[in-house]
Length: 197
Image 1 (spheres, one colour):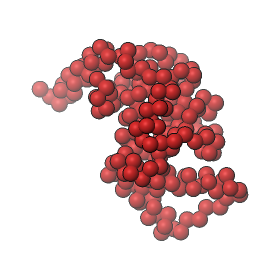
Image 2: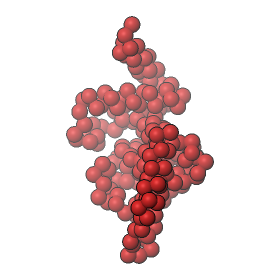
Image 3: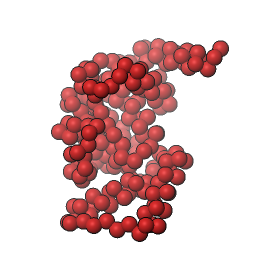
């Protein structure tokens, strides 16, 4: 049997498991937030703290309902893989080598500049959650990369999307059918990774 066939068979099995359990895999936005806060010892911050969000082209600013920060060093050590830690170290070394000093016009901008540096250098990870319907998480982004956190969010927001509770009209307009299929496969893998199936 070819590797592609094995993968297809694995996805078929995961899909069948999802179909049997899907009513338990749909989480409203408050539950997604609660689980993120508990799992990652995180805390909520005002979206205005992340000053550039208003210009973000991935999420609708008026629909951003929650921003979460993970900044516990022990948790950060666990959620970043080796490549992500290496990328953060490179940023720290590069900033130190260049003697980066950021100008700021007031205390709010100083805090924002520090937020950006801490994200780049791996001292914090910020999660931004969007809800276009006021019920489910319809979109998110993580500021700095953690495949573990992205996967965990997919596992908890994908149920609403993949059961049709979030209508296609709320999905990004430029998403292709192939991207939808890839997203579903990613969702199934995330469910399996976190023992949801």
